[in-house]
Length: 176
Image 1 (cartoon, rainbow, N blue to C red):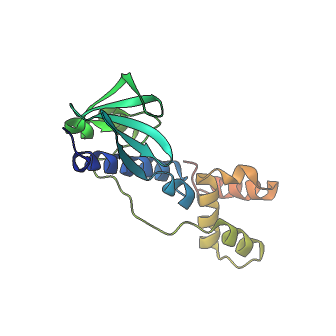
Image 2: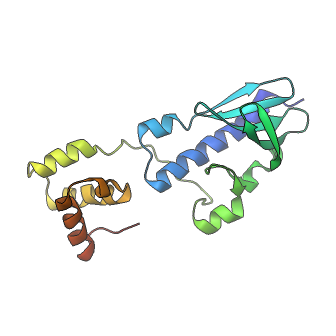
């Protein structure tokens, strides 16, 4: 019988990959990081590994096989993702797991995922400082790089888009 302690490394890896995917997409704000926390709920035949408040994976307590779900608490036997012994063969950062080889090919998975905890960028403070003329050139470039990376630039007034384009043309920021 599989125990919760045997499932914890899997849940931890799922959380690590989910957080890495948020960082890669540039949407690793506090709310998204909180909603990437995993939890384990042990049932009679399966353990549920939830991400945030949503069901994500089910682990067969007899075999250690990992499955996706059809609905909360309902195993999807057509979505099998190896066993607790093969968790490193999979990338768990997407909506549904993919092979680790595929994730390496797309750049989603590196051999040592970097999850450096850093303070979230203060966009509001940056915009206020920019509008007030308080940012030096380097800080302005940092602000606009963040706005481009998060695609927030598309939701701001036209002058921000024109400034971003000028910085792109000058090679001071990059479109990722």
